[in-house]
Length: 250
Image (tube, rainbow, N blue to C red; front, side, top):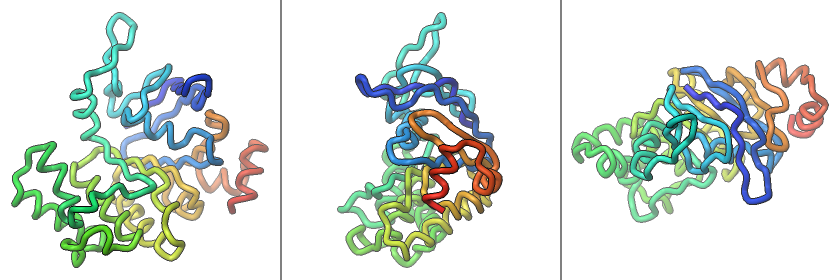
């Protein structure tokens, strides 16, 4: 579902990604962990072309992301073509990015109506189903300001699912939440994983990584230092940098 080949990303002189190569199979959950500034979120943003890559190639479901290749050279796609690709990829951010002037249901149905042209009655029916799925059937008419952080993040997940993505990206979805609200968001994510959704998750929730991830990748300094079975890496990390990191977070 995701294939990264020697992906690099520079911001001016700052080299943030230094040749990331990895794959995520359909239905797999990959969890990325590592210290702040290691390039995890940047890599996630490159997957749906919110950031352009400086070098290398990224594929989602066999399709080159953000570029067409002609004669061995990459040519950046038009914004409208990139937007079309992006419809297939759901993204949940650290800060919920909900429309404050729309209700929970209004947030969920906006993209299917505006982007996919789904009629309002159908979008509303599906939106209510999705809010029920994330445990918020009774909050359809509530505005973001009336919801807790955990509830807002669950609306954000429902909103991403409303586009029927084949891949979900989560960028530290619980790090802005009060500790007691983290569990309700992770529960929804666990359910998605159990239903076979392909997911790439940047998180510091090591319990979630141990329980749900098919593969764990530890990133530092813009490279993947170590990757493999989460339980194996957590109990017996091979690289001293991984050992040092895990000793602080577990």
